[in-house]
Length: 181
Ligand code: GTP
Ligand code: MG
Image (cartoon, rainbow, N blue to C red; front, side, top):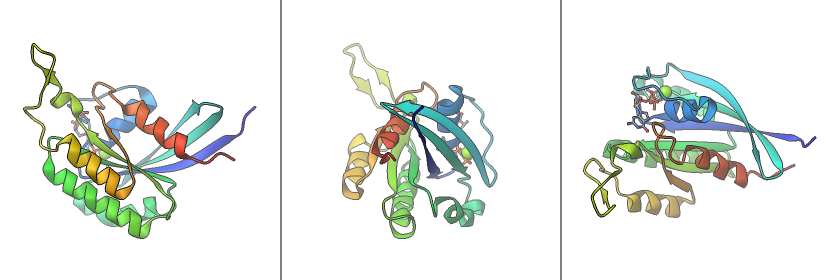
């Protein structure tokens, strides 16, 4: 039996970007069109095997509504990993994501692993007859996300909780960066 590594992970991001939906997809492989806003925070766990290690994610899904903003430090203070989420159709949510990354670098554990997630990819992924992406609803370019990730040393994925696109990949990428033992 291989030892299990527990990883405390926090989700941060503006209200309604899809934090709880990403967790619901990862933990239950499910999606709800009208998910209610999180109040305070929610705690969920999920085990997964990556190569020869077993990781138990202990997930704190925080509330994005402004009235809960003062609670966030409680959840990120001793987190080993963070998922900072924005909505690729909402530029304000990308600005908020920048602020979260800055706050994490200033206030969280200095070796925290941060993944930046541009969520709701399904809303823009319409293809034309040539198979090219028609990005009618996209408001944050993939380059903006990539640039922020490069500047701040973050993992970066565009995701969809609705279609499951890249959701497991985000958690696997975080798990891969967790030192074992
Ligand atoms: P707070 O808890 O208030 O901070 O919001 P949240 O970030 O947890 O967002 P939540 O997961 O509750 O999702 C908000 C709304 O967006 C819900 O109606 C979801 O169904 C929808 N949603 C979430 N992810 C996606 C996605 O990938 N694609 C689409 N089309 N809708 C999504
Ligand atoms: Mg939520």
